[in-house]
Length: 209
Image 1 (cartoon, one colour):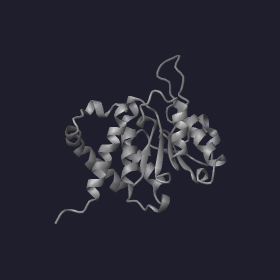
Image 2 (tube, rainbow, N blue to C red):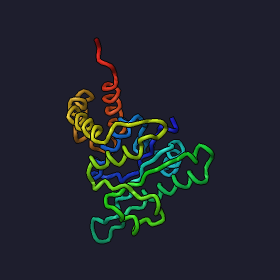
Image 3 (cartoon, rainbow, N blue to C red):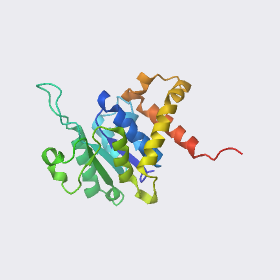
Image 4 (cartoon, one colour):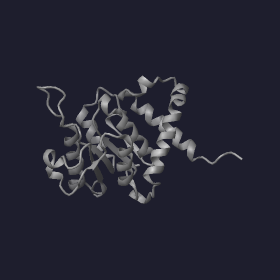
């Protein structure tokens, strides 16, 4: 469970949903378990404690630091993603033997921008997804390939499979009585994971004779 769990640390906004859904699909399709703060709606649990617990329980992680823009004058860039990336890195350096197995990928929407926004990660160059779901799939596949003995299909195949899943999604949502608008809401992420997992598992089953 620990070695297959992937902590997804990314922006939580409407503009990022397409990337988040593509990343989530890729993690599941590649045989790993996606984990996120979105999976737990327990309002009684302090947010930072929840994040630390998730990080502790995940051997792998994806950290998207692309939200450095401001939408209007007076706004500030978001620092949650770099902060949580720092927690994960600290756990990998200062934790127990299992924690020191941790590996992570930093994602951004523009190449080399990290040199201005987060230069301390020099040597762990972020992968660039250019705000395109297909590129995000490719980035995540390259990171996960070979992890814990898992040899993965090529990115072109996974992108094609994601296209097949997206084509099937309306019927899958209808079966669960979800609307498309609901499925794009962040508080439906756990439901989205369940739908992806069921679809991937069904694809993996041998056809009946």
